Length: 455
Ligand code: UDX
Ligand code: UDX
Image 1: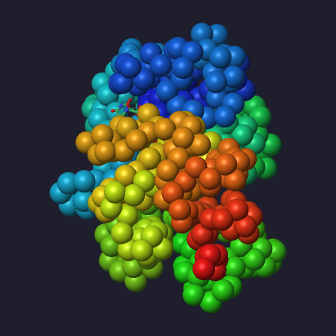
Image 2: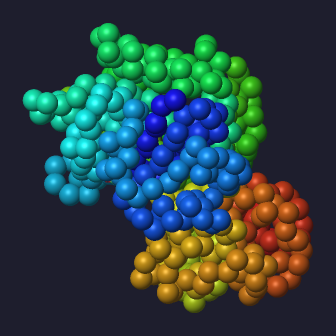
C-alpha cells in the first residue's frame, strides 16, 4: 500500500484522484488544498465542482481510501507519491505578463514539499507547465544538503470538463515522462503501475520529461487550432451562403481530418486553451522562434475575432442599438455539462452587451453562481434567471451560448409568443433546428449559416 497525496483540490486534482482512489483500493489517497472552504465542500454532500459522475465516484470511496484535507504539510510528510495540481494561471504582471505561466504557486509548493519531506518521494507534475519546469523543480527539491531523493515525473492531464470522469476511466492515452536514470525509471514504473490498474498497457505512453511536458501544450494548441480553423471558415460561409455544418461533415469524413472538434461556435473558452497557447507562444518567443510564435498566436486572435463578430451580428441585426433592450443569454458555462465559466465566451458577450447598455438576463442550469463571482461589480447589472422561459419573457433577442441539451428541448413556440417583436435568435452553438425557429417567427442568425430573416 502506498500513500498518494494530491496538492490542489481543483477541477483537475479532485476528479483525477477520485478515479485513482476508486481504481486502486489498496492505496490511501489524500487530496489537500490551502483553501479550507473548498476542502469542507469536498467533504460535504455538495461538492465544489459539478462534473457528471463525480459525486457517485467521490461518495463511493470518501473516508474509505479517499480523504480531503487542508493540512497540506502534514500529508506531505506521510506521502510516497505527491501529485501537484495547483493552478498555473497566466502571468498578469512583470516580464511575460499576459502570456507566460505564473509559476509562483508551483514553486511555493516545491519548497513546501522540500521542507516537510524526510524520506524519498516521487513528485508528479499534473498541472500544465512550460517545458523544462521539471528541471527547476528538481533544483529546488535538491537544494539542501540533506534533501531526500526526489524523482520528478511529468503526467499531464488530458481530461476535458464535463466528461472528466469518463476521460479518466477510459483515456485515449496516459502520458508519463521521466528521467532516464535508474531512480527515474523506477519512479516512472511506479506511476505506470498505478494506471495499469485500469488502463490497458498499450495506452500508457512513456517518454522523456521534456516531451511529456511539451505534449500537453501542443495537444491543447492543436485542438484549439481546429476550432479557430473552422470558425474562420464560418465567417466566409456567412458571406457566401455555404453552410459550416455541411462543410464540417464533408471534411470530417476524410479520415485524415476526422470529425471531432469541428463544431463552429461563438469561440472556445475554458481555463486551458487560451492560457496554454499563449504559454506556447511565450516559450517560442523566449527561444527566438518568432515565426512559430506568430503562427500559434493567430489561433487566439481568431477566437477573439469570432466573439467580436458574434456581438457585431447581434448589434447590426437589432438595428444597431441594444440600449435598454432585454437580451436573454442562454448558457454561461464555457461548454455544456460543467458549472465552469472561466474564459467563457458567454461572459465576453455578456460584458460587451453591458457596454452597449443592454438589459442582460442570463440563464444556465449550473453556472449562475460562478457568473456572479466572475462578473464582480457588473453582476448587479445582470439578471440571473434559472428558468429559461422567464429569462426569455419580453426579450428582444435570445443568444444561445452554451450547448446544454436542455436548450434544445424547450417549447420555442411558447417562448416566441412571450417575447418582444420582431424576435431574434442567435445560435452561437448551432444546436437548434433553425428552419423550425424561422417558421415559428424568429429571425434566425446562426454561426456559419445564411441568416433567416422575415421581410
Ligand atoms: C489547474 C491549472 O489551471 C491547470 O493549468 C493545470 O493543468 C491543473 O491545475 P484546475 O484544477 O482547473 O487547473 O485549477 P483550480 O480549479 O483553480 O485548482 C487549483 C487548486 O490548487 C485550487 O483549489 C487552489 O486553492 C489550490 N492551491 C493553489 C493550493 O492548494 N496551493 C497553492 O499554493 C495554490
Ligand atoms: C481541454 C482539452 O480538451 C483537455 O484535453 C485538456 O486537458 C484541458 O483543456 P476543456 O477545456 O475542459 O478541455 O474542454 P474542451 O472540450 O476541449 O472544450 C474547450 C472549448 O472549446 C469549449 O469552450 C468548447 O465549447 C469549445 N469547442 C470544442 C468548440 O467550440 N468546438 C468544438 O468542436 C469543440
